[in-house]
Every structure is written in structure tokens, then in C-alpha cells.
Image 1 (tube, rainbow, N blue to C red):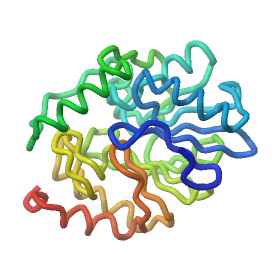
Image 2: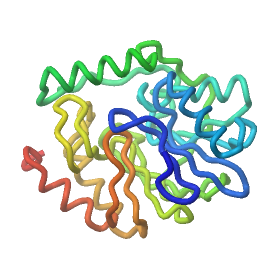
Image 3: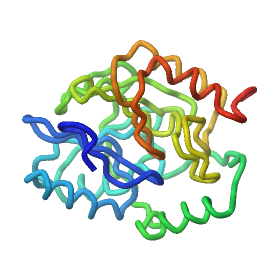
Image 4: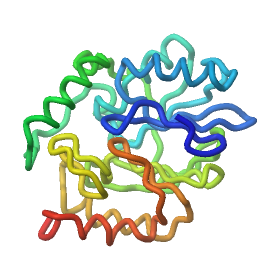
Length: 241
């Protein structure tokens, strides 16, 4: 799905990842679920590109619904996979603490599970080798992604700011569609390690310049990053998080 010149989404409002196409090659932000490999292939064909044009995958964090086809790209095509040092073990092993799921509605939750099964999400393939980054790094990849630490959802959760794409990719720092309730609009994401820290981290986006705020779950959000903190804090049920 083309969002803007050089900016594409793979997947849908349930689970999404992103492709940045530049003259220097392609950078992927997250890798969705394993079955999104086919979505990637279709998007590459539409662009007249191949896997050989991909220069790297940048993970917003190490959870299984974001690492999807990353190991396949790394092992079969030599594409490096980048992740924050604090989430490197999570990306390599899948180990994460158990957290409260919060509110849940049966229909949306079952829809999330069904979609995950359809996209082979229950057969996660963890990333055997990663390239670690830290807060503030500018990666040597197409688009020169800038890493903005967003601890809370996980210790190494980040936003990825790509000025050339006029976008900031926020992973699960927030969501615009709650996968367990189906509620739409900007709000905290479920399965968050430290909800209070995640809310505080939203203020780190305020100084960025972008027209798109792009989550891993939910519709693309055309807004200024300066508006994000207020909008998410105003969501029903967020008070006291």
C-alpha cells in the first residue's frame, strides 16, 4: 500500500510494517509476521525491485509480531537486522515478561489470533544475529533512519524517524487500533511491559518533524508528532496509566 512517494505499508490495520524506497535502496521498518513475506514480494514487484535492493531491516522492538520475515531476509539474502541493544535478546530468543492484557473483546481478539495464524504468526522465527543500535544513532541505511528511544512497551522499544519519508515509525509505542478490543484511534498499546514509562516516552516525539506517525497496529496516522502525547493521554482508559 503506497502512503506517499517512497513510503509503503505492508500488511493491514491488524499488523503492519513499512518499506522506504529511495534511489540508494530500500529500508524496511519492522518485518511483521512471517506470512507478510508474500506482501513484501508483491510490493517489490509493483516497485520494479527485488530483495537484492533491501539494505536493512530496522526493528522498533523485538516482539514476535514485528520480527516476522527478518531472519529469512538475513539468513537467505544477507540483509542485516538492526535492533536496540536492550531488545537484542528478545529478538533472538522471544523471551519477554508476562504482562496484563487489559481490556479484551472476544471478536477482535479472535480476529487478531486468526490473522496471526493465517500469517504463520504462531511459528515465529527469531533473529539469530542482530546489529545493535542505541538511542540517538543515525543508521547508515537508505533514508538515514534516526533512532529515538521509547522505553516502555519493551526496554528497547524505539521510534524510527526518517525525515526523507516525512514519517516517524512508532512500533508499539502507541496504537491506532487495539488488537484486543478493536477500538480505533490513538491509544496505548496492549502487552506493554511498563505502561507508565510508555506514556512518558511519548514526549520524546514532540520535537520531531513529520507528517506521518506510523504504528505497527492500526491505521496510518496523519498528524504532527507534537500532537501524539496529548492525543494518547486523552484516550479513554488512559488516565492513571
